[in-house]
Every structure is written in C-alpha cells, then in structure tokens.
Length: 357
Image (cartoon, rainbow, N blue to C red; front, side):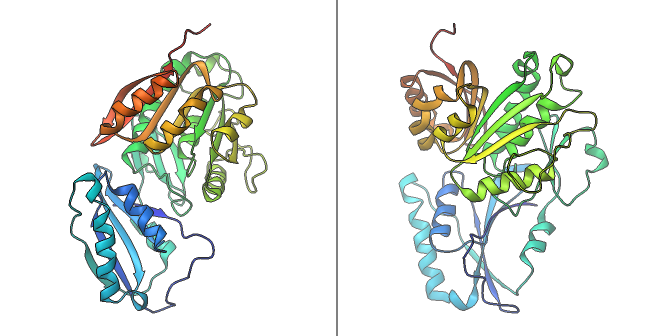
C-alpha cells in the first residue's frame, strides 16, 4: 500500500501521550467526496490523516484517520459520522460505511515509512520515498525523491498521476523541440512533485532533444498559497539535488549524473506571485493541479503566466466539471480539450484562443 499523509500543522495538539490508545477511522474515499472529507477532518482538528492505495489500483483509495481515544468516546464518534455523511448529500451519494479500530500508540513517522514503496508513473518516472534506494528493476527511470511527511502531492492521487503522465508526453514531444531553456510555471506546487518531475524530464541527458539545449535545461517557477507547501517543495528539492535560492540545505548538484544543474524558484502566493517570479516572461508550460472552482477563478490571469504559444496542463477536476470549466476558460480566451482521464478525474490541455504573433 502507498499512503499519502496530511502534515500535522504547527501548534496542533501532540496527542494523548505515549502509550495511550487511538481510534483508527477507515473509509472508502469516493472521488467526488475526497477533497470535502479531507477539508472537514482538518476543520475539526483531525490532522493525522492518510489516503492509501496500491500502485495497481490508484483509483481505489482508502481514507484513514487517527483520533485520540480519550477525546473521542462513542457519542463524539457517532456525531463525526453524521457530519461526514452530510458531505455526500450535495452529490446525491451515500457515504460508504465507516469502520473504527482501536490501536496503541506508535511512532507516526516510522508508521508512514512502513506503508511506502517506490511507485512507477508513466514510461519514465519513478516516485521514490526519500529514504529508499532505487530498486534495480526501475534503474532506467527518472527518480523523484519525495518525503511524504512534508505535504500533499505524492504521486498517488489520480490527478497528480495524470499531470505527471501528461508532463512526460509534453517533455518528449513539443518540449523536446525547444532550443532555449524551457520555462515551466507550477501554480499550486504542493510537495513540489510536478516541478521536480519537470526538471527531471527536461534536464535528463538522454531526453529527446537534450543535445540541442543549453544550460540550464529548464527553469521552473513554483508558487503555493500554503507556507507548508513552499517549505515542503524546498525540502524535496534538496532531496533531489536541486537549487532553490534562499532555501536552506539545497545545493547545486545536477539532477542526473552528467546532467546540468537545474533551476527552481519557489514562493508563497497565487497567480499574481507566479507572475512576479516570471518577471514579465511567461512560461512555455503551465502546470496547475488544483480544484476546478479555483481554476475557473484564476483563468482570466493565466495570460500573465503562460505565453501565447504555450500549453497549460490543468488537473484536479472531475470529468463532470469539464463542460462548465471549458466554457469558463473559453470566456477567458483559452481553448480547452480533455486529453486524459482516470476514473472520474480528468486533465485539460489549454492553449490560447487568440492568434499567436
């Protein structure tokens, strides 16, 4: 199983203390309800949460949450079940049955590690827990080292996998034909996994078109409104030998033996902050794995971060949301096409609807 943890926010309660029991909540996470369930648990102060799946069935995800038994007797647990069930009503769904298991105290960081394993994505990528060696069977893949204790964005969610696979296709297709440094913008970077994948794919010495590029092979500019995500991106960049200006512990080592040192800039903010990082030179590729309503709200500003001839890869949306989102993007001046989907999740590819000079 692969577990995607949600970090415990600074200042949250440390739990009931060593040796005290916990309740473990288990629930099948329906795709339509996943984001709402995570939001509700966080809002209720339940921060020890994970999503589990096997690499072969990434669309079948189990939601896990750990609650101090002393704080959650049976009446409170039943109230929590009612609150979670109410989230399914707007979708016309029934919340799957919740199961409760009591367990003893444990070292949470070690617990996460026991659940994790290497996870191949697409044809060339490998999401690799930072503490593991790359398995021999995946030695020919580009390993993205991720510490799952830092933030969301571990490659396990269908929307992240869709983005990684589409990024791989773009890097080996249109991206390989660019003879200048490729500029990539990552809006809502989370753990930094997409930004790091872009650097891996565009800087690998054996990538198509690599011989025609000059250093640096790629320049990635990433933002997230969550300071924890910015910190996580910097930490994961360090795991991969990527320079992040101003971030402690990073270094200018190449991504792959014999490759060029890559460039990554990360800041807290939204689309306006991303435009500032780009300094008036919009990107060739925009990566945006966030919820559909947020994409719709930000779409009018995409022109400040994506060049007229560039491509945007938008995920984080349900296939059922595509018609409305496509219309909103058209109003903002973008042609959108659903180019990939997994289960009920989809990925849109956008280009400017205006003629390119």
